[in-house]
Length: 184
Length: 107
Image 1 (cartoon, each protein chain N blue to C red):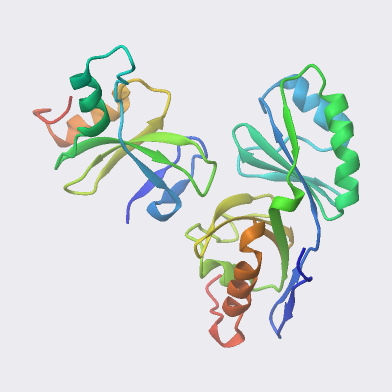
Image 2 (image 1 turned 30 degrees about the vertical axis):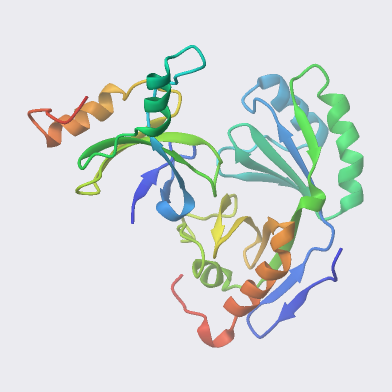
């Protein structure tokens, strides 16, 4: 694994969430039995389309009609969770996979994060379209990515592990103070 | 730029988030078919100047396929529908018919 990447200027602080934990869960998301188990185990509801739900530092996000992503800043927590998920979902057709090492996650702190992301993504980032519960998979520059709001002035953004350095440089470049607009 | 509504995410996605998949509603010619049929299935694709049914993949988003009905001449999009549909649904055909009262190009 490479070093922890960090960047900051007057507007943004971009930090590498070094070694976060991620679990991909593939199943029938609308299955009532599955939804109940998830709620009992994590105290989180299964998220709606294009949304995420959270419980303290644990996030559960909608990736596609048959995939959820469980995210935690703490890798060890997720490794423990996998056994719990697998045990509690016995008898339900699911695929649970630790994808922690295949993705890199950054935190972008700064109230103008919408301006930064709007430089590279085609999606609508208006505060009433991209809300505090939104989770979007899209592209930023040429990299496929997913991001969601953690606080009003902070987001988590993930990309493929192999793009990590490139993606970080892209973000740092886009975060240039002189180039930030004030659209939103 | 082409903009479609992904029928799965139900949001507007643009061309740069999608991957084109070519002509829709093809009938697959498998091992039992004649050489000529297999050749036609594999290589001879429609590329009309006008109304066209296509497959598109929401590759940067949900990662699922869907169908699009559009006009390659005017770039007008008539609608998108599920990849599981064997033929274009009535709603889409009606939308096309509105534009072309004689229905000449719609199959």
